[in-house]
Image (cartoon, rainbow, N blue to C red; front, side, top):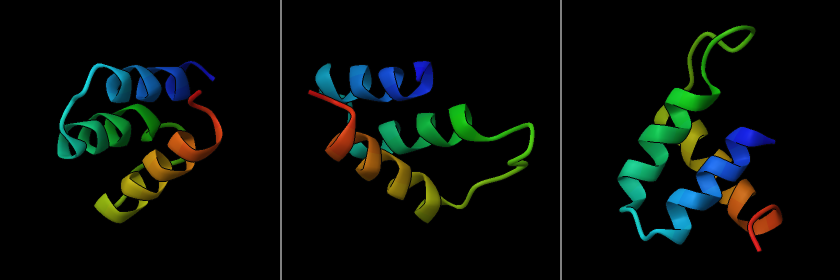
Length: 54
């Protein structure tokens, strides 16, 4: 939840899409997800933006 909130904060503060995706990639990688592609990071941002951010 906190990672999704952070993505929403980046969007709210008007960060560039490329930077939002870069930060999302860094936030969601690790543990059981050792690496993400840029497309996967973009999909995460899209999903968070459409379902979590108000």
